[in-house]
Amino acid sequence: MSKLLTFWLCLAAASASTQNAWQTLQPLTGTWKDLRHHTVEQWVRTAPDTLQGTIYALTQEEPLVRERMVLFRRPDGRIVYRAAASKPHADALVDFPLVFFSASSWTFENGENDFPSAIEYWLLDSTTLRVTMSGLEGEPIEKTLSRVSEEILRLRPSLRGYEVLVCNRKGAAIERFDAYTGEYLGRLYAGAVHHLCAGPDGYLYAAARGTAPSVLRIAPASSGGAQPFSSGYSLQAPACLAFGPDGHLYVAEKTGEVLCFEGASGRFVRQVAEGLADPMALAWDERGQLYVACAGGRGVWQVPLDGSPGRCVTPERGLRAPTSLCFTRSGEMVVADADDISIKRFRRAGDTWAYAGPLATGFGWAEGLAIGPDGFLYGCDTRMNLAKKIDLTVGDDLGVYLSSNVLNGPVALVFREREEK
Image (cartoon, rainbow, N blue to C red):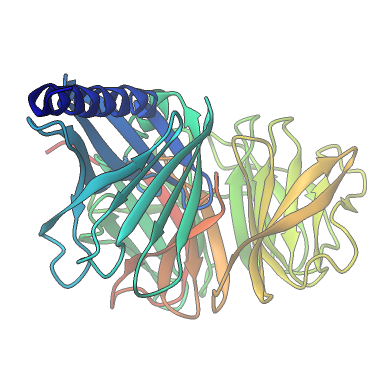
């Protein structure tokens, strides 16, 4: 066989090999979720010889691009994985040529890059992808991804167009912030307020202490303006309040009573409960049942509205001093506690609630739990004078949400749409 013929046969074999390698890479196209790191890696074919890759973080109000990569085939047939370099040149690009492939695995290497110097993709089956990065420095990093629908990248509801109102117990004021940017918008109300909730009429309702304890009705306008609301009952020390599904306003006294006031007029209707030990928060589940977080009773009480005795529905010794609670869209009960585990999950177990594990730690004193319009959980740290944000779906503490020198003992959060100017 002539040398020329041998050359052309070798060239044809090399061309066939690179063509086969490129074809084997096509199953990478699609959307892959890394459950451990809460990211999504998506590959899209943007040209016959190009696959575009993007890594998104799912812990924001909308998917956040963390990294972009590209797989492409050069005119000479060589296949290259191109990615952003690691520190300190994070804006540079690094090429990793393909050095090995099989029907379901691909290895890309660049010995001049410290870490990673090798990137391996291994398609374990049609729905599972393993990615390993290794190098001259550090331990290998391995992640396993599952194929998911690209719908996972749809935009989450946003806090754009909302404001958040913060009740300051020590600061004796209600402060306004842009819920999306965190920008301070000014003071809504100045006075001795102990708790805050939103009413079905768009007004705010505050538990006021001071010389004349009462419930105040605060106008939704940015200038505030408060009027006494409760009547027919002499409140002593209103601790917390919430509107019920019946439209009435329920107020818990520090002394242990839960009182019902007519939602439209504020007139006293009846006493619902008594003898509760230091009630700190009220909340309603999807069944229309009232629950009270009792710090002194070390538990959550379910309180019937017909006046019959309430009962503790959380496990004995499951809570140290519960200060706030709310119910998630999935039906879980989330409770803030004066404990090393600052926020705890509970799931319904018949007519009681079973502990389902920790949700967040690291609060100095957690209070004022609220689920925002974006579906995230928000909570006040009364001791550290800030508010934090928590992803309920994966249990991630997303860090500080609000921090401002006007926060002084924040105890309650209320989200509402901003006024159009």
